[in-house]
Length: 154
Image 1: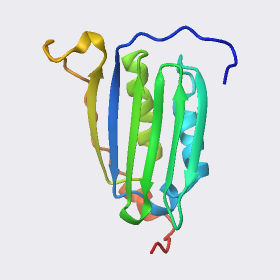
Image 2 (image 1 turned 90 degrees about the horizontal axis):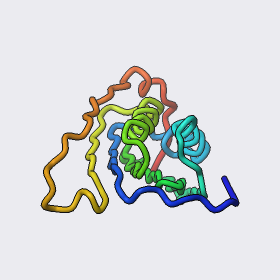
Image 3 (image 1 turned 30 degrees about the vertical axis):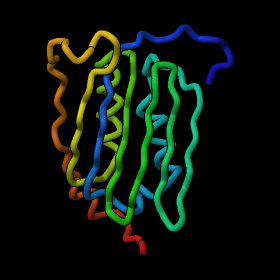
Image 4 (image 1 turned 90 degrees about the vertical axis):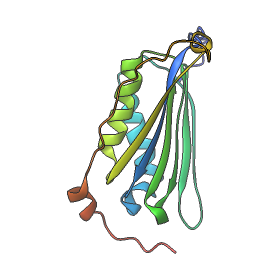
């Protein structure tokens, strides 16, 4: 994190809304896990981390965000449903933003993924031409999910 003023990023970016289904309950209920994988996903990106906060719910569930110089990464989990909602929004390089999503996806034990990608910013107003966004394949980690320790969630 920096204490020095940074120049503002351009106002245009890509926002990936990522949903993970059939997740390992134990894994997605760990604050340490989320802090670690989000940090790892951001490693090497040309984005400055400005702030972060995570919170564990009772009896289960984690929410958190990392505030970036070019926007944010956030996560919210419902372990009892094996479900995670994750946002990755950046006004930085689109390939870099997509790479962050792919790194997060590779770290989570899950059965299915749904990614909705939106272009945001003043250049992408409603009457502009549609733009083809990169697609993501559904990732299946069934063999990893089977190794996930069982958790008693009520």
